[in-house]
Image 1 (cartoon, rainbow, N blue to C red):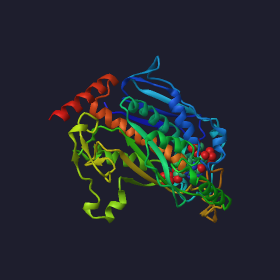
Image 2: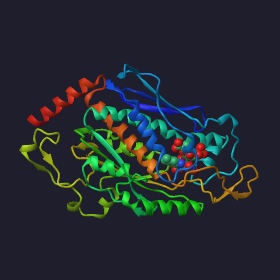
Image 3: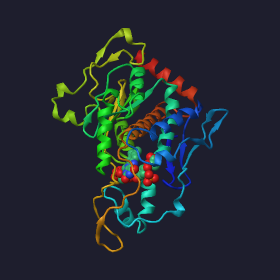
Image 4: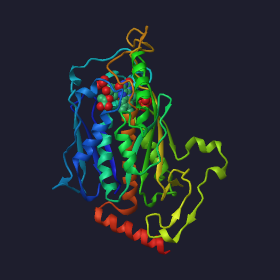
Length: 380
Ligand SMILES: Cc1cc2nc3c(=O)[nH]c(=O)nc-3n(C[C@H](O)[C@H](O)[C@H](O)COP(=O)(O)O)c2cc1C
Ligand SMILES: C=C(O[C@@H]1CC(C(=O)O)=C[C@@H](OP(=O)(O)O)[C@H]1O)C(=O)O
């Protein structure tokens, strides 16, 4: 059985829901962990008025008993405090960069009907599903961390340090980078951009550590883990590029400067690396669609927010006359929030690959199978 999920819900509807199917039994579920991710998704410098209305928390509607998963479908709900959909009117002037124009034409309907579902409000429950998946990953000591590495052109290079230190640095940064020392510069840019009626994008990075060998497969295109991760990340609103490892930079270098040499040290044979080490990780933890025992490194480019307080040219769909695009309350910058979203959608894809490799009936069976796999791989 495949681990998968769908979402439903409109931005200003009653609630967002995610239905997670194929999640193993016996995983202790701590809703506080999900709520913490939801809180982080609402944060980051540069967000608009909506986040002052909402205080997102998850309601687990099914699939658990006495705090543990049952192996049955898990329904997750996040209620919209700003529920007002029935009272909202339509828009007439589509916003460049949003789904307004194309959606209204394609569905022969309203702009409202498109923006309500296209909205990144939907990512609340993608994050909830990802945070649920992380509780499975935790049982395998797999850690996922996401952070901002560039914002509005300002480079916020990641710090190579133990996980605890990186988490501490990220928690003390208002933009969720690993270099809080640069927060003032970034915040000033966001303030100045917002005052000019404009918006900003940036780049986020996610690292997954503690991965076993062999998640994903080389054997079929739609099961390759690099492809699955790219799809999940690219499908996040406003993400316009995905890189794994060196990504586009690999295309500019010679092979000897790209590929990661393979070493073996019998002294570390009993660890999760099975004794193999790579002095570099330019592949970003994936070769031929499979995890190679190294940390997974994924980067995503987020475009600037589409709704501009100083709007671009548009057309009134009723009169066909030129007019400025519609402006409603909006974020100036949501790159920090995107780092949380990308982190959690990547976590879900890793969990999906983990249950594909080691089964998804129960956590204890998965753990026993991983142990057996590592033992067999060591002894072969
Ligand atoms: C966390 C987050 C918050 C966003 N907030 C807004 C917003 O306030 N206003 C807006 O116009 N777009 C916002 N967006 C972007 C739009 O949802 C997105 O551009 C739109 O759905 C069109 O999809 P596309 O950019 O993937 O093509 C946000 C995106 C994310 C990830
Ligand atoms: C509601 C969220 O983000 C929204 C994403 C969004 C968009 O067009 O994507 C537009 C804005 O919606 P509103 O007009 O209600 O302020 C954002 O606030 C959220 O992330 O929770």
